[in-house]
Image (tube, rainbow, N blue to C red):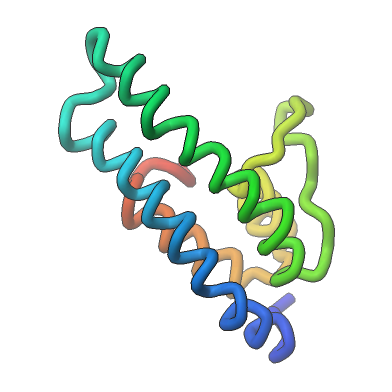
Length: 120
């Protein structure tokens, strides 16, 4: 099912918050994927300094702003049945179910621009 015009309007209203979350997300994953922050002791420092704000931005975006955009609460369990409040869980579920598929695919593309294997 495609997203309604009102969902796209809500998307545009929430776009500044999405941009902030994506910048934080992008900074974190650029460090992991291109600056070698996945290896050695620096991964712990990188995770603490940049992973924590990224996780908080992700959860805030998912619980508040994405709920506004999609007009429904996020799923709180991933495909394995584990508790998750991350935006990735929402997008994976929507893409699998075909819910708001055009908007879910757009978000997946934006995330994959920063982390190519994120929705493999």
